[in-house]
Amino acid sequence: MQTLFTQYKHKTEGLNRLAEQVEQREQLLVTLRACLNSSMQQALLSAEILDDTLILITPSAAWATRLRFEAQKLLAAANHPNLRQYRIQVITNHKELPTTQQNRSAEKPSDEAIVALQEITNNLAANDTLKASMMRLLRLISKETSVQS
Image 1 (tube, rainbow, N blue to C red):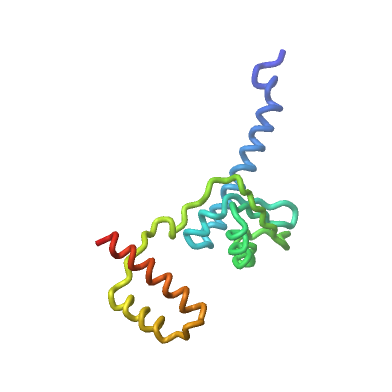
Image 2 (image 1 turned 90 degrees about the vertical axis):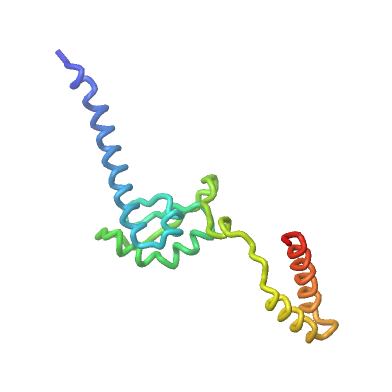
């Protein structure tokens, strides 16, 4: 007669194996994130080792590029004997990561900075495209200054 445990033992073994794999991936992710700065830690969404390849998951091509610069350090940190290469996969349907730029607000330039920009602009040739751009910038700064005041 089979007990409930023996009847479902093969299913619990599969769950135990799955739980072990998840734990290994989590530990790998913690280890790899420890090698990165805080913004890059957030960008490394997942990591796993398949055969001789370290697979890194990130939410954008920009983060993938940054992770490529850290690849050798991450390969060493993974500390796996057969590891020879890496692959970075981009998952674009992941929610956007907060960036430090989103938390910043524009600051009004100092009066001295505005005067310096005006002097530089006045010294540029009349047909210089930089002069036209600088004049637009100065007009924009002037509008923002009058709104904030």
